[in-house]
Image (cartoon, rainbow, N blue to C red; front, top):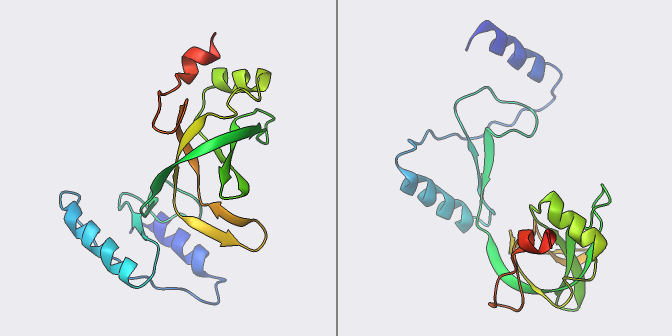
Length: 171
């Protein structure tokens, strides 16, 4: 550790009342089965996943690409029942039915498709979305929902023809 990193570390822990020591295992990138074995072991203790720290940099006390969550996700089909604006006002969040609750998910939609949804907010109603999510959750404030829901693709019906949203957006 060089002097700059050492100084950062000292400043980081200076005013802390508690410091958590976390076990760390160095795994060669060419042996992913070791990572999979470790992951299965933590699931046995009812943890939802593990954190992977890429050892090419100093720890940063913020969101960083050097620290990655490793946990399973699921995909399911959901009927789209509407749209909702994001913070920036674009209609790029889709509403879907989850049981008898209406939930939301976003996707990595292009500006063209967001513009299309702004002009045609009900155009996706009755269509189907393939949504990837971390797990089903139950929260007292929001009820049952999907955690970290992301739209993977849009279809005319479940398992039906995929909608080319870029072609649709420029029509």
